[in-house]
Length: 140
Ligand SMILES: [Zn+2]
Image (cartoon, rainbow, N blue to C red; front, side):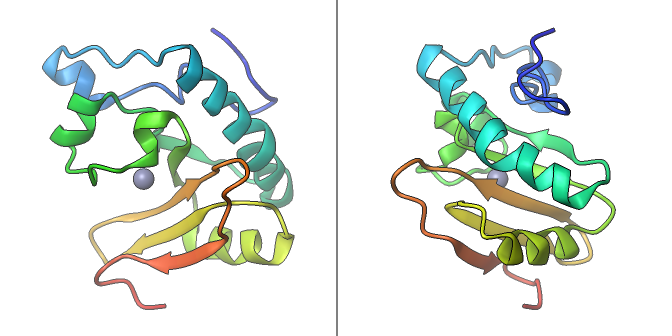
C-alpha cells in the first residue's frame, strides 16, 4: 500500500469497481500518479483536515476505457488523475466547507439528486477555476 497523505492512499485513488468487475486494467502511469499525489496533498487532505470526518473515494483515476464504461465525459480529468468523487456523511456540507476554506480547486460538482450523493472534486495545477457546480437534478 502506498500512503500519500495521512488519510489517502494511491490504491484507493486508483481503485475502480467497474474495472474490477469487468477485469479491465486501471493502472495510472507516472504522470497520472503524480497528479493523484498533487490532488491528495493540495486538495483532498487539507479538506479532510477541515472536515474532520471520513471521506471515501468512489472513483479517482480512470483509464479511458473505464471512463467510457462509467459514462464519464470524454474530457474528464479523472483520466489524468486530477479528479476524485468523494462520498461522505454530507457532500453538500463538504462543498460549502471547501468554498469557505479558500483551498484551490478546479471544479466542485455536487451530485445530490436522490439517486447519487457525492462530491466530484478536481485539482488542475495552474488552471484552477474554483467552479461550484450542481449536477442535473441537484438543487443549488
Ligand atoms: Zn467525478
